[in-house]
Amino acid sequence: MNLGKLNVFSTKNMVKESLIVGEIPSNREAYGVSMRIAVPSVIEMVSLSLITMISTAMVGRIGPEAMAAVGLTNQPRMLFLAIFMALNVGVTAVVSRRKGAGDQKAAQLCTRQAIIMGVVISVILAAVAVITSRSLMYFAGAQWDTIDAAAQYFRHTSYTFPLSALTLTISAAQRGIGNTRVTMVVNVAANIANVLFHILLIEGHLGFPAMGIAGAALAINISAVVGFVMAVGSLLQKSAYLRVSHRDNWLPDVEMIKSIWKIGGNSIFEQICMRIGFFAYARIVAGLGTMAFASHMIGMQLMQLSMTFGNGIAVATTSLVGQMLGAKRPDLAYMYGKVGQRMAFIVSIGLCIFTVGTRFWFPSLFTEDLYVIAVSANLMFIIAAVQPIQTSQLVMAGCLRGSGDTRFVALTMLITVAIARPVFAIIGVFVLHWGLIGAWLSVIADQGLRLILLYGRFARGKWTEIKV
Image (cartoon, rainbow, N blue to C red):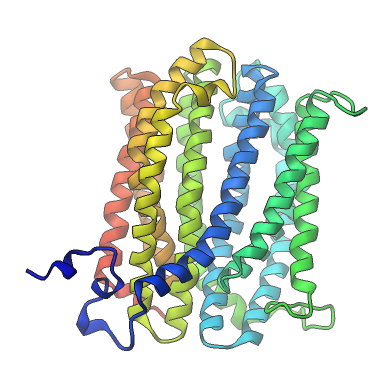
């Protein structure tokens, strides 16, 4: 037996010999390239998650009702952001392909067209969000003790929605060329501003008024401005690969818009499926009552934190897969997909240990209510169990998106998130009467099914033949 073949972390064993069209990088080179892109992205996303947790903890000190009110705005806001997340998948894929092919002008053109589309769409969505804020919160499951605060918070944070959306779009273009260091700096700076003004404005410090939830909303808006200014600044530098200028052609380019839409269009369907599924799931949990939803929110904070590690590695995989396909090296695209999956699995083991070890300490950061802490601690075992599944499926999805295979990813999200998760949650909560635990067990079912479908698609390799 060749023991070398048993080394699942070796790049030499990741690609079948019949598929190899050139030299395969060494372990050190391949993992090094992935790490250089993944680490800044992980730092960026982890910092964002940590800031969100800190902000939630600050609001939670006002009371469980305040924390539940802010939590109710998450899914409606993400529903509005879904169209940008979808288009940004197209932006990252197109830019990475053009970078791999050595076509800088086309990459810059893609960035400009994405900005034009973003301005128009974001302004329209912001207006809708402001006008329908109270109705959306009611639909999201707000109770009599949370709807006023939730509607106020959602309406105020919607004013800077266009800035947040455009920052995401610019960051997506930068990730396409593997420049995750820029996006890290932009988002970390915005997050620091977020925490600073949460401290100053919620309870009132250093002469600032104590504004409660309104102060939390204002802090979000200030951080959106900071992030937008820095993101735009990253495109104005003369040495920037994606440099833009007012002297450039800013008229719509039909062919480039079609290229973005070819990939992003399917991702819009994916995002809609995800947001509908998450919205329905949150609505089911909200029906369990304010205290249960507060416990759920604490569990979601840790879930989001763990997801950032997988998403950060997935960003590197998406960029590298697109660049390798643009350079006509499908064998390396396949290899980098497996490298990312291996990295994600190792990280997930550490996340499992952390989750179980902090199951009582972590909830105490958000509330002093002993009932909420006890319920949240029970959820941590479920969150720990899902870590290896979650990180692997995130990387597989990132690989398929980088190749442009967004239609299959969208169908997967329809089956797993929009259908399976709500259905299993309904069974767990209303049929088996397992309450919040029943709702969270549906997360394992959703994530497991997602991994099976995505990895099966990745293993077949048809995604390497997609033209962008």
